[in-house]
Amino acid sequence: MPKFEVESDVELELWEPQMYKVLLHNDDYTSMDFVVEVLTSIFHKTQEQAVQIMLQIHEKGKAICGVYSFEIAQTKAQQVKQLAKKNEFPLLATIEEDV
Image (cartoon, helix red, strand yellow):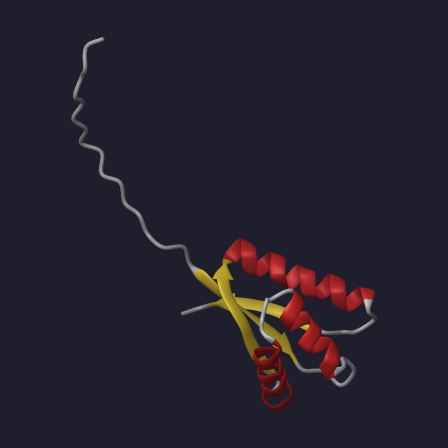
């Protein structure tokens, strides 16, 4: 079978995807233990990391839980919403562009 070399004038341009922060927001009803559970189960934080982030949420009103591509950030925020609803907590997770 003959071998052919093909030259192409097509340039491929690659770029990194835009990243998004997932934030958890403080409220007066969600328990601190539940927030730690969310951080360990959904965001795969260690117990120590989860406690630190939970304290930031409590003291500053919100904190970043992770930075992901849009689809993953959206999925994580939805998982928080579902788990919070199942446990009857109003915990809010939002995503915003990481600039």
